[in-house]
Length: 528
Image (cartoon, rainbow, N blue to C red; front, side, top):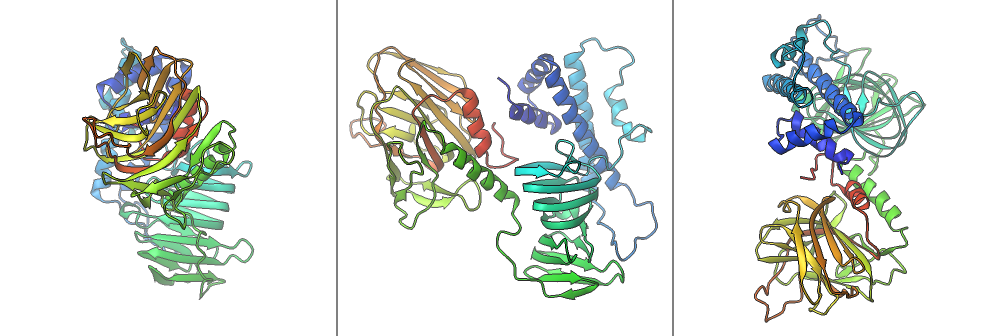
């Protein structure tokens, strides 16, 4: 089954010129599968094409008279940007050609060639440069006022009002803007936006130098920095907090410019400057904090699942040896940390445990007998030192014990300790090093089978013949209880673990996929 996220990743690799032969074959199959897939592809490519023309237009020489002091000129993108834009156009043209080949083996003679498509900017029918100024790249709990929302993920010139939640926009020249509701903005183009009311955080790389946020009281011209800006809807006062770099505050009436540098703040109201109110932590969410907020909402919803036996959010406690189970009544207690140390997890503000010594582990107990279990966790493997590397293993080798490990090649393996033969089928890829990966082990004693999913994709399946209930008992996370007689005595994980959940049932592949989406570290994170 191909999910929306899979399609997005496939389309992105194609547009970025990173598609493999397998990707191209898979894309052909997807596009032949139905009109919905083809429509999704067309919308995606149209969006990238529009952004491409925006980049190209931004790289052209300014044709107009010198700008006024109230609107200092944005920095001209470097030649590298133009080259990137041109390269993107070539890739898009190539991608279009690939799709034509895949879908239409015998195209009519009137079809335009790839080279003709690459010259499209010179034609009168080329898209307007500012058709898409920004994209919605992430958000949590977002809701817009009627008639003031984006077209899907596209933000063209226009008026937008966020009434709930937090969103992250990325403008065509690279500026990131995080809006926290309630907020209202008017997008002019890829470099100019007016903040009518509310709060925004702007992070502008060098390619977006000159990114300008206008308000009633002043214009704020970014010189490659990070800042927060708040506009009071009633008074029109605007408060600037520069976190890094420099922002030029320009009076739209007089043209006077006030430079404000990192660590400083300024208020503009009724044509004059004044001290800004004290900065309040949390007023200006970061792009990374959106993922954490999304995860917190996921945690709240997941904990309401009555089939959940335990949910360890990996949240550091005053007693740092305690691994708190956030689920009450599931029959599982808090865990105990031995050696593993607390570190930063998937997002700033989220904790994880670091396992980097042979004796590091955390102990949890899954008591009783079970017919079904699902064990899911987020893990970041830094290196693989041993033949077997434990994620979660039952202590000892009693029948019904469970184990979930990686082999030296990074492939997942595991199962249930049973008597008699079993059959393993390896169907997925290995776990990449240095990236957060979601691993879920779905075990059924009734079906006598186990499926292990990596980032929502089936990676390994095991089947056995003997009937035995699942009895995990005491388990070690990030290690195992060494057996001095075993030839693979050391199985210590080298990496981090962030979140562990245990259900008393099997989760479907769709449910596992939703866990991955809810907990993905960020927009740029890839399942591959």
